[in-house]
Amino acid sequence: MRLVAAMFKHETNTFSPVPTPLERFNPSFANAARDAYRGTNTPLGGYIAQAEALGAQVSVPVAAEAWPSGPVDATAFETLANAILEAVDRGCEAVLLDLHGAMVGERHDDGEGELLRRIRELRPGIPIAVALDLHTNLTEQMVANSTAIVGYKTYPHVDMRETGEQAGRIVLDMLAGKCRPVMRWGNRPMIPHIMRQATDDEPMRSLIAEARRLETGKVLAATVFAGFPHADIHDAGLSAVAVADGDPAAAEATRDRLLDMAWERREAFVYRGEPLAQALARARAAAEKPGKGPVILLDHCDNCGSGGTQDDMTVIGAVLRSGLADVAAFSVADPQAVAELIAAGVGRRASVSLGGKRDMPSIGVRGKPLAVEGVVRAITDGEFTIRGPMYTGVRVGMGRTAVLDTGTMEIVVTERNHEPWDLGCLRSVGIEPTEKRFVLLKSRVHWRAGYKPIAKAVVDLAGQGVTTSDYAILAFKKLRRPIYPLDATPA
Ligand SMILES: [Zn+2]
Image 1 (tube, rainbow, N blue to C red):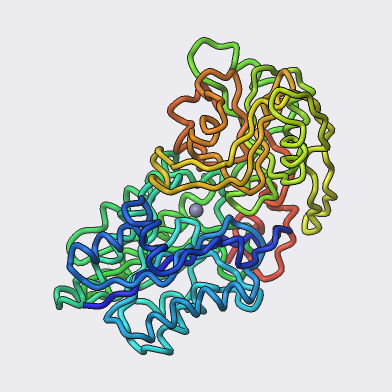
Image 2: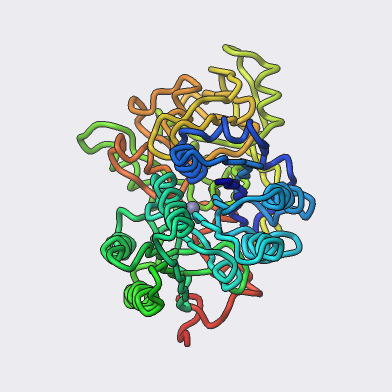
């Protein structure tokens, strides 16, 4: 048996000023792609293991994932899509795809749907398994052009490999004549807030438990997608999809049960923040309470894991002025500052104009650097292997990385974007997070994968950025309306 397995992932924040050229994907091809992902906790890692266990011949034409950013440039989309299409054209019995589900291209609002449509155009009816992120904005085009869609059931995403294995198993069982998958999907007019989508908390905890409970008998897979709100496309928001064995009614009932539950709980998906000054006072009080570990401070409006520039200095500036001490901050993405800190050298004092290099026209913000002075504590190549539960085994490249110590805050400065979900982000640069009083992270929910077990408390700090938690300042033009909670009375 010949299989094609491939990864092509991007979560597109249509409000982000960060461009998405081919280089941002840092793609690997053919044997290099297979070697990089074999044994990792990713859908592609799951597909490779499944295929090899069956003794199938598996071709991995490409593995490419870029940090979330603005729409994918047309050349990047064509290059990566064509790598997959050419492999399919060489001949295979099925295609196993590791996609995100919220990719917007310069020319296509539904990147995954376009890729799947082209595969089916080339090979009508070919079985296609698709593993998708919990932040998928599902579309009719994706469902119409695939065989089995399964989404992650965790946020932070720690079940990537098993999601791939579940999708792959349905398609491989179908090839073996053991099942006849039918798929049904739908959505509701609601756009859940990202800060309310963690699967440890309500309302997602109950929705995921129900999806798992429904996966019995004829129902091969039940998925609820919380959606990715920072994408101004028609279908952004909550959806559900079910795959059943030869039983459309079972798939429809499963889908409707999940959608009804989500709609009933819509108010619980609304996030309410607090003013920055008030949150800083709460952080100070939290640190004074007994207990071990750092207080986690979340700069959630500038999260590169959702398309943030990762160089907005609003929250870091406020924490520096607040007098909180013994803080480690991860990170400011600023290649120019990294070069200046490297030029100064470890152990030397340096003054840099940090961050604020990018304007954010979609939210009317001009980039504003912060003058910061301190001692350069470390310089590294920014590489480490993830040991925590999310993306376990994947090699990380943050670009050249420096630590600037102001006396009250050790600020990690990186050349590239990287969201801190693994303790390795700090440990790889010589900072022990468990020993800090405060750990400031540019993250929203994924930080929990590595840092929740060591956290004494967590405080949300509302700054600014293109992952703003105030959706009222995002100018949606294509999103279907009315939609809850942006509009008072959705249909
Ligand atoms: Zn996600």
